[in-house]
Image (cartoon, rainbow, N blue to C red; front, side, top):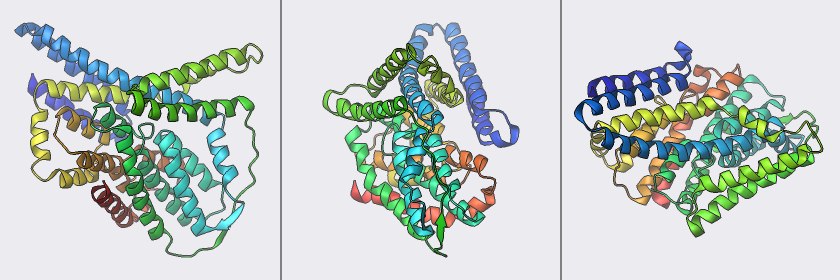
Length: 409
């Protein structure tokens, strides 16, 4: 039975890696194999009289998944509304000057990508960053360069706050890092992004112009945006002062959003904020659910002990660094989930290094992160090989950021 579960986990990882080839959504394959693994465990437990013990393990695993799932659902609903109303991209475009040098545009794209990915999910931050790029009259080479920069900056900014990256949220929820400790990643992240910005500035520095932007946002959109920001700040403050779980604060903010929608809907029937729950990316949530079910089953049969031994075959600093690089080829969510379930003993600095590595390392390949895949699907000029030309620069920036984590933490 153990061997069958291991084989299913391997098949699930292969299905994730080959999603672009097979055209089978990774959410479907991982959810199937995750559920199938636990079904087999229950069959075995029933035969051996260990059903009660397995039920306790499953309940614990499901509670962890539910907390993370509900937090992601709340944040994604906020972002779905603001993105659908064009408020995020509109606010960014309004802040951009009408004409500027290309090097200055590089800096502004990097800044906006980092800030956006701290507040919103990586997919939204990537889409907004690409909308900024598309607003300017650029050559294909310039567009590719900015897209590569945006992917790296988005993945970098996401590791600083739990609202930005799933792996950061997972490490935080497992109790290894606090909100205040995660903020220590801000300076190393900026160092990595600055290194890439400097490397990207080589070449011509011509003047570029943007198209005019018309603001179509309404008063309600601004109110919800302010509420979203207040919810993020409250999540950090209440967690640090009173240890209130982030999921509770964000669900409270979401409930206020729905109450506002209910009040407004009395007078303007076209506003239905509850409808935006349907616009969130449930495939992402289901993928997350499937992965954690698979990893939970692997922990139950004792396989993850070997992962811990493999991780500590080298020093944790080196292992985390190479784990970040491997996340460019294998999805960082299952990698992180498996390592967390194996329960390694690391120092705060080592946990910070791991958080940075698994969050940013996927930037080395365009298929290594959700941000890269979204960018490739939205920009026809950004092919696998076009992105690969920037791997040396991305590798230098990733290494610089990782070394800064170890040095400054």
